[in-house]
Length: 332
Image 1 (spheres, helix red, strand yellow):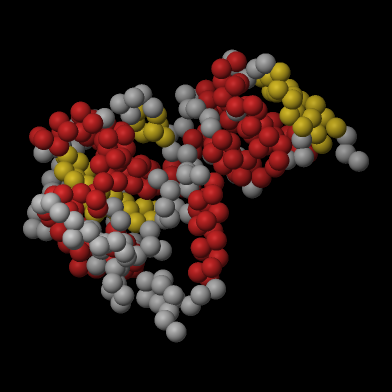
Image 2 (cartoon, one colour):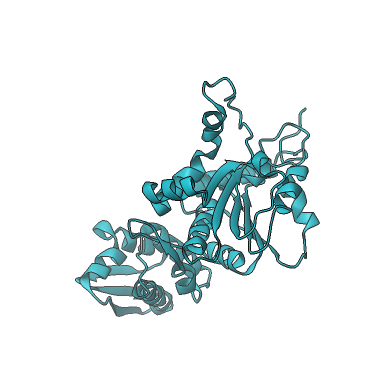
């Protein structure tokens, strides 16, 4: 039987200790459930008890989480679970880097930061590329992080405008019968983009910049024939573009502009038999200088843990079902 070792980890202050340990020490329970150790909290100190070969990686895990806190980031249960996963896989070193890349503060003072290694790679791709593609499942932060990067670039005067666009494709729900003018009919398609900007900028700032034309939210069809200079342009839900629409969008880029294209190629809502521009563009632009493709996975999901399990279940199911051109099950 392995000798039991005891090690003490001191957290800088009581407030950080409460945050690190979690409400009713729930974060400590998460760690205990994944390692053969017993964790005993005492004030701003935690005592780790267990076999030496387990106490050592758990100690390093706490030290890295404390390092993240010391860089100004707040720790929640999602962060602890992700850190535990990295530790069990031996990927501990980049933890501080992944958690501590603060992009911007919202109007309420909340920090928007990367929360996974995939998100960190995605944000870095946006920083260094004229056109970055973020491809991955729902909940990985593709659109929200792109929005945060756009607002940061706008506030730093790197660009003069933010332009947000989506293809107006119905995902099974027919909206054409709804009353109202054209803007009222297309607003349901664009609402997620508005919501993200409200959260980051606040309603008053958003409305002010929208009125001045410095922020534009519009369906993709409205981009045709334009050249967009000094702009940060985001194309969201790009899996629902046709190849022609994707080419049209990418050729709108003008001087001083950057583009981010986001989408989930497993959720294509185009009519049966229609090619997805996002699927095709990966082959066309592979290796083109200034273009970066970044792929996020279920590991990068920052919503409820259940979302990760749901997506994994769908992926497992899809692997057993023959698929057609867009990943749809083939008709019998």
